[in-house]
Amino acid sequence: SLTQLLNGPSKPDFLDEIRVTEINLGEEFPIFSNCRVIPVDEHGTPIKELRGDRGERLQARMDVDLGDVLTLGIETKLMLNYPKPFTAGLPVALAVSVVRFSGTLSLSFSPSSQPSPQNEGHPLNPTGQSPTTLTFTFMDDYRLDLSVHSLIGSRARLQDVPKIAQLVEDKIHAWFDTRCVEPRFQQI
Image (cartoon, rainbow, N blue to C red; front, side, top):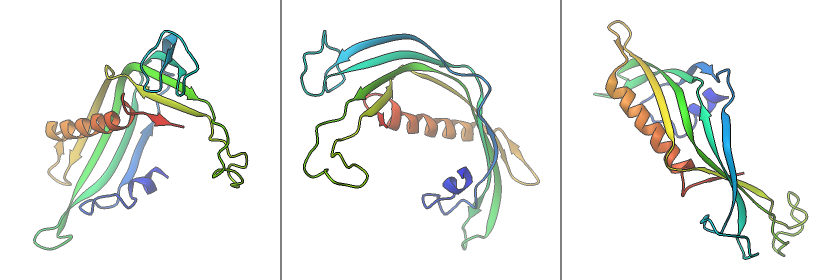
């Protein structure tokens, strides 16, 4: 299923089929510590106590530390489209490992709201209430250490090219920052 996801419609046309060669989810569990529960307003700013105003909620913050290795390895070909499409393919193998992650996780539940007339009677939501949601984000002082191994070429092979490692690391950090680092959040 991961191979199908990687080969979906957003795959660039200069890449051949992407094949997942390795998945390692590690053997250790993340360590959660120093949990604290604080009241926050609708913007996530800490307040002294809940007054019952709209958007106020309790937020849990905890430190997360993962010292295990998580790895994803892929193989593909870089399609060289000059002077005409699919002139040649350059084999590329990448293995990206998370070797350390630590940061502060912020969790909050937003309770379901009262029914609204436009939501009532829908087959997936017969009560008309908006569902209770779990919102999570990481504070911006997180640490994400990656290890990138690359192999380029078929006969004369380039191994662990530093520029490729830097590009992959920068892309992963940017992806994480734009989705899961405060003020951005994920909601379930």
